[in-house]
Amino acid sequence: MKKNIAFSIAGLAAIPLGVYFAFTSNSESQTDAITSKEDASSLEMTAPVKYIATNEERMAAQKDIGEISDELTLIMRMVEMSLQKVNIEGDKFTPDSTGRIQMTKGNIYYIKQQADSIDISRNTKNGAFSYESIINRWLEGNFDNITDEVEFLLSLTSRPYGKYDGGEVTEKTRVQEQQYIQRFFETKQSK
Image: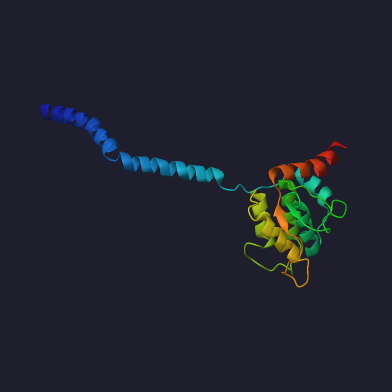
């Protein structure tokens, strides 16, 4: 019995020492592990969330955009929407000659749904410049390549397909974009 008590006391004394050595000897690897976990959790938080529009957003988008029954209409609606983010030199896209669609997630989602329901013959690329990849980037809020995307879309409306030789496409500043929104959409909503 005395033997059991002695082993129990030795065991109880060994536990705190083991814990101490476990935490002090591997502090760098544990710090790295904690940092890795924090990095992983921040990546999870910034991972794109699959967006699904509400019924109200869908109805508003259908009203604002209308039916998209063919590929040329899809291209033009995407270009009209992108005018919020880019400037296109030339007379073709003057305020009076071009429709305007606000770049909202609801509108982008509606265009995505419409693109899934039409036959595609002009844009047969499956890479970075497929309609789906462009729309998905827009849904994620990624407009890093917006000028290239717009030039590509415009190239699909010219002959020969795939060659854009129109006016220069430049990205709007945040101030220019805000002014565009105020001019074309805020006045429309207040009427």
